[in-house]
Length: 573
Image (cartoon, rainbow, N blue to C red):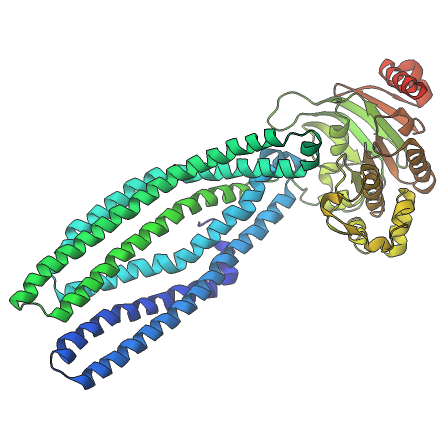
């Protein structure tokens, strides 16, 4: 928690007021049993109605004061606890945004979601309890114990037995419960993972009629979570009856020995009543602390998971004096080799080539030849392990990351649109873009032909993930969004695969005419998408097999010729 305390700074006022008000509530609650004993032993014993009314009014005032202090304490505790969790959640989200692809590969998406939601909520709840329950319980216990000792020190000896028993039981049970709570959070991750995967691919599940199979997969993980939760809860449930037995046994002992003292005249009836009330307050405070410690165990597991994210340093380190301007869109790969984090196998091996500014380069190769990995090194989505990548004749590691990525537009294989309107999605490329600029980009990407048919035009609703658009439409929209960045380099990673060949040809022609100063890198499976490029680079098993113009490669590259001929046969068929 020390690592997270700075996030409380914004809510420190509420964090201070909450326990102060809670202590005032405790003082009011402690005063009530004493006042009640005065009513019984003085007012009722002496038939003094005026005394009974006076003390009764003070009791009511104490009760109302305690209630007011309690309400205010709860309010401030909630603001401090959940505000604290909100600040941590915000910083976690910002931290994840700063991660490189290598960092993101370490954590599953489901785990990150659970940490930002479930773990932060648990932390907020326990923080609130720490400010209230963790203050109320010990102060109530101490004050009530002092009052009990003041009333009858000999009768208070019952605590010599009851409190050690409670502490021992609490320690044994909570020490066994902690690892189960940590394991439970991990199993929540697994359940969230399968829920996310299934809902994202629900159309595939239904089209293959695999609902029963997915239900079995979910049941297995859900049952595993339930079993772990039951183990933890069974331990906790066992704690409650043990605590209750100790509490009621103590009360019975007090009634037995205290009753004898009342009968002998060494103790007043009202004192016995208030003593029992203080006994109850002491033991209930202990039960309250037990419950708090149980929640604290869950929070400790959550804190560990949250701090793991906060302490993860981005793989991408910025230069002390970063460059903020790209001179041009030229790209150079010098002796570049790369392997993914946690792997020793090189995905890219000794890559050397140069792209001139404004050149159109096509990249083709068999599946798994590392085409996408190659281009992801340009905007530093990953960093090279060996060698260097230069953009504008400067190593990409010397650039300010934001400046670099602002000048490199990347259309990924997975075309993602966000819920909102088309205009809002397009402004991801340029938040200050005018409607005219958006429409021009849509025309270049051959998307205006279907967008213009919507009655609401750019205000047309985009559902989550762009599910109300076809694959080809999404690809054209994401290309338009990238064009709005006015980049020096644009990378199309197989981003026209769902577009028909006629539309693909229009896109390539528009790029050639309108983006002649922009370096364009096109990864494609179809030769027709790249044959008009200035040069084509052929990848094979993480290496450059050959590079040259379409006609040159037909005679010099066996791989390129094989791909071309197989596709020509397909067209002929």
